[in-house]
Length: 120
Image 1 (tube, rainbow, N blue to C red):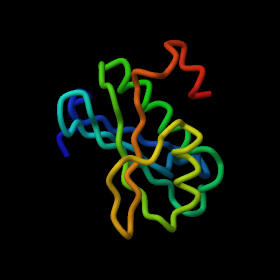
Image 2: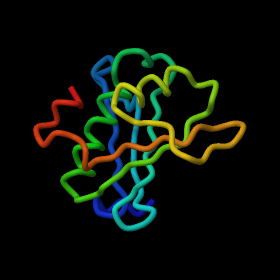
Image 3: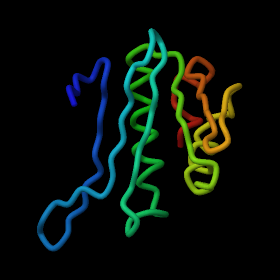
């Protein structure tokens, strides 16, 4: 998994569950080419709809910007409406390529305000 916080960044979301810390979600990006990284995240079913995916994505976007990346890309299954909405709220737009099962999404990091206002 070689997470180095340069080419490969990964975060987890934890909750206190009866005195134990449990991982309920995770997200990552991997630099695919200079300036561009592919981002993905997941949240276990019981914790979906609570903003965890959005929180993970916002943190990954901030880290990517600080690292000097210019875009993040993601592939989302067409039927995953909830995930598509999360990406849309974060400013991702459909890219030129797609296939019958997935939608290619792109976030231009150079167009975001420096104070992160678009990510709130």
